[in-house]
Length: 109
Image (cartoon, rainbow, N blue to C red; front, top):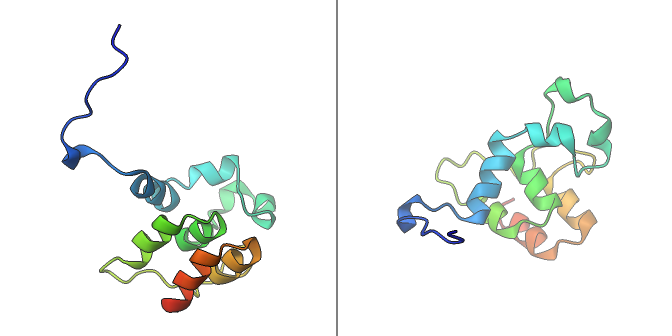
């Protein structure tokens, strides 16, 4: 049996931070299974109300994902967007003690 197969060219490989970003932005179904934000656990799953991806990446201390979100050319990420039980991404990161994310968000505020 083969336990290893080459994954192809590097162009076809997606990094873990990029994969996390896609899950945070597109795969909101995981939040219906488990929401890491305590208060949001009580929001009905079919409400369709979720904090933005920058909120969850800040809450979970996903520094590289935050950098990917903030580094986009479209400039669609607002670090002050309200949402979640902590109010916004900066407050979530500060509450969780995620200093690297707090610094990053303050620069992009």
